[in-house]
Image 1 (cartoon, rainbow, N blue to C red):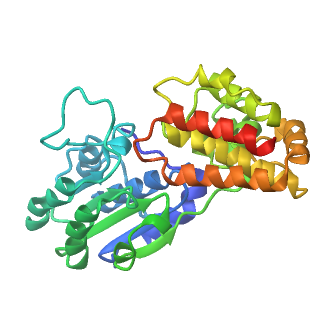
Image 2 (image 1 turned 90 degrees about the vertical axis):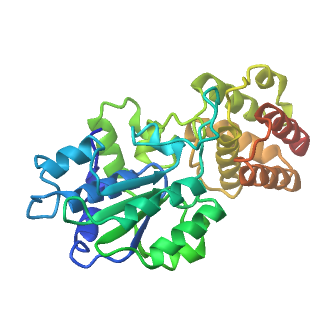
Image 3 (image 1 turned 90 degrees about the horizontal axis):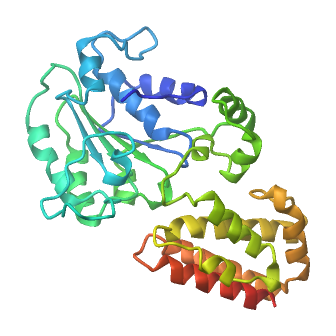
Length: 343
């Protein structure tokens, strides 16, 4: 699969390439989801394994090492990546022995069998006589027992071996992992950079879509069910929320299918809550400016205590959105409490 990098990542890639001759044991690159942080780190891994890099340190794309890297057959790289992140990137993933063929959900965490599988790789010398690379993503979704196994290798990796860790949420990475890595922050693109890139990709109504994506350009294309609601359901929920105390939850509840994830719905509720609080304090809505009139009407009519009680409920749901809760039931509860709190 072709590695894509983006205009706003030039500074990040330059910083990473500067470390090529004095690599630390581990590098942890962090930045919000939707700016392509993993892609930049993946490109850097290719730079490390290229046999004839360009003057700026980037991979040539033509040597034997680059061809093996692109074909996922390079013997000096290992991916410790969750199944949910490996599938859309076409990265190698081996499920655990107890995985069933008919399971519907992808593994979203890094499991202990993945970190234990590194033992054979790390005990061997480099096949190509150069560096060896281990890519770990998402570093904030490593199970405790897997983290313990990973830490041992991070502390004393074999010579010429580097761990490249990536996370979308640096605050959720275990302190023991953070303390053993060189931390590098991925810069978020400016609105102008994001718009220019989206327009170059032929995205219609790019500014509105960028706003709804929280300013993260790649999130405009993200259809991961954890973050994406079908447009018709999204609009139905927003229409109901725009009715404030007159909201008719039954209009939405009947249309919520089993494939809707709680994390995606909770993200929409959270953004609506943010806009409501902003409008109430006299600021402009951030995520749904096209619904400014509805937001202003709801914020003006809603009692402050009720409004912030509902906002706290949304916050609590987001905290547990990754748990195996019944999405339809929780969405129904949030909509009904919305109506009660604003009445």
